[in-house]
Image (cartoon, rainbow, N blue to C red; front, side, top):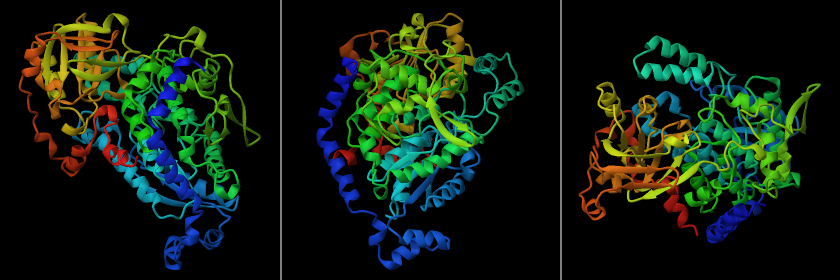
Length: 608
C-alpha cells in the first residue's frame, strides 16, 4: 500500500474510534434480533402483508425466506430515473424464483439540478438530500425487512439514500443503477454552442437544438458530473455488482444485472449464512477507496460535501484535509468531460471500471481487503459482466486501455496528482478542483467584484462591465443562506472572459459541482457569509489572490482593517416562493460545508 493511503486510513480510524464503535454497536445489536417481522404482533404483520399475493404472504410467514425492501427514486420526468419504472416488477419476479419476496417499501424524491439550474428550485437541491435520507429511513422503519435494494442515481439521491440506509446498517443493502443514456452530440460541440450563445452569436433555437441532442433519451446524462461520479464511487465502495455502473438502460445486460442484484442481496442475509450488512461494508477503508477513485477520475466537487456526510452516518469523521492529502499522491487517470472531451460511455468502452480499479490496486492506492456486496476483496471488481447464451458471467477486464486519451494506466497518468485543493487564507477555507483548469489559469490576483446573485453577474457581462481582470465574489450562497445552490449560470460568461485573455476567478460560499470547468473557482468557502464569514467583509475593489497551486485564498490589503470591517448582511427576499419557505427550519440546521452541509451532523455527533 502507498504510505500516504495507509497514513490517512490509520488517522481516520483513530479519529473515528469512538463514533465508529458506537455505530457498530448500534447495528450489531439490531442484527442480533433476527428477522423483526417474526416478532411483530399479529395485527401489525397482517397490515404489512395485506397487499401481497397469496404466495408472497405464505413466504413471509416463513422466517427462512428473505423479504427485500425496494426503495426507489423513480419518476418519469427525469431521464436518469425513468428506467426504474419497471425495476420493481423485475426484482420481485427474480426474488420469487428463489423463494424470497420483494416489497416496494417507499419512494424518495428525485429532483434534477439540470432542470432547476439557475431557477428558484435549485435552492431546494442540497436540502433534498436530507429529505431523501429521511424518506429512506421512513421506508425502512416498518421492521419487516431482511435486506434492501436502493434504486437511485443522480446528484443528491445516492448520497441521501446511503445516509438513510446507513442508519439501518444491519441490513444487507445493494445499490441498483440504471445506467447512462447512449451518447448524443459531442461534449465539445455542446460547450461551443453554450459559449456562442453567451456571446450572443447563437440563437436560442440553436441552443435548444444542441441541448436536446445532448440530453436525448432515458438514462443518466453522459458527462462526468455528480450523477456518474455517484455511480463510480458506489462501485469502488463495493455497493454495486462489479461492472454494473455504466451499462446502458433497456439492454439485455442491464436487465440481467438488475435481476442478479435482487438475488445477490438475499445471499448476504442472515438466512443465507453469509451475512454481510451495509454498515460492515462502509468503513474507513472503503471510504478512503472512494476518495482515491474520486481523485483519479477528476470527479464531482459535490462529493467534498457528500462524502463527509455519508461518513458521518456510518460513525466516521472524514475531513477535507484527508481528501486533499490523498489528492497529492493519487494520479489523474481519466479525462472525461468536463475534464476532457469524452463522455462516460467512451470511458466504459476504453476499459471502464475494471481497468481503473486494477490500475489503482496494483499501484497500492486502493485497499483490497474490504467487504463488498460481491464478496470479500476489491479485486472482484477487476472483472466485468457479459451475457453468454443468456447467462450472466464475469470475465477479467482489459489489462490495457483502448484509448489513452480517455483512460490511462498509472505509469502514463495525465497528472501525478488528483487535482483537489483545500484553499485557505483570510477569506476562509474552501476547495478548488484544478484538474480541468490549465496551469496558467490557476493563479489569479485581481480586484474583487462583489455579487450576491448570479443574474447580477450575467447582467454586468451583457453591459460590458466585466472586460477586465477580476475575481468574482459570489456570496450569500452557502447552506444557511439559501440552501447552497449550484452556480453554473455564471460559467459561460466567465469562460468567455478567460478566452478573451482576461484573468478571472470565482470565490463563493456556494457550489459549482461536477460540471466545474476551466475557470479557477474556490467554492464551498466556510464560514459562509450568512454567519459572518470573511466573504461578508469583502468590498468592491479589494485586491484578492486565488492561488490554486499553493492552495491560498487571500485578501491582500491591511489584515487588521479587513478583520475589523462590519460584515454585510444578505438579502432574505429569496426565502419565499417555489416551496423554499418550507425549508427554512432545515437551512438553519445545516452544518458548514466541510462538515457536509448536513442537518444531521449535530445529532449524529451526540451518538459517540
